[in-house]
Image (cartoon, rainbow, N blue to C red; front, side, top):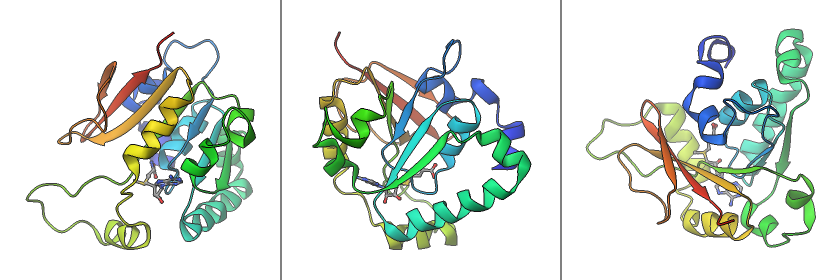
Length: 192
Ligand SMILES: C[S@@+](CC[C@H](N)C(=O)[O-])C[C@H]1O[C@@H](n2cnc3c(N)ncnc32)[C@H](O)[C@@H]1O
C-alpha cells in the first residue's frame, strides 16, 4: 500500500476519479460499504477523503483494525492517513435500513462506494492463495444487487460500484464508467 500511495497515480487514478476527487475543492466524504482489506479505502483516505469503511466479516474487520492500529504507530503512514479512515463492523444492508437516521446518515457521505466480491474470471488460472483464502472466509456476496439497491435508495448523489472489466454492470442506470487496469468503476448518479 505504501508503494501504491507513492506511485499509484494520486488523484488521477481510476478510483479517485470515480468518486470525484480530481478537481474537487473539498475531497468527497465516502462510505465504503464493502471494506474488505480496505485497500480502496486506504487509497481514498490518503488522498484526502474522510472514509467510513464497513465490513461484515468479523475476521476481515479485525485484520484491518489490527493493520490500522499498526499504521498509527508508523509516523509516515499515520501522517498520510491523518485520522481520515474509520472502520465499522456491521452489515451495510442492515445499516442502510436506518437511513435517513443512524451511523451512515450521520457521516453525511457525498459518495457511497461498493466493491462486492467479483465473479470468477472466465477460463482463468487458479486465483492467488491470498484471494482463495479471502473467498473462503467471505463467500460470494450473493446479496450484492440488494446492497446496490439499498445504496441507491438513500438518494446520496453518487454511488460507485467497482466491477471486473469483463462483467456486466450490477444494475441498469449507469451514468458513466471510469475504466481501470482490470476493473471498471460504474457511477450511478441520483436524479436531482
Ligand atoms: C472484494 S472485497 C472488497 C475489497 C476492497 N475494496 C479492498 O480494496 O480491499 C468485498 C468485501 O465486502 C464485504 N461485504 C460484502 N457485502 C457487505 C455488506 N452488505 N456489508 C458489509 N460488508 C460487506 C465482504 O465481506 C468482503 O470483505
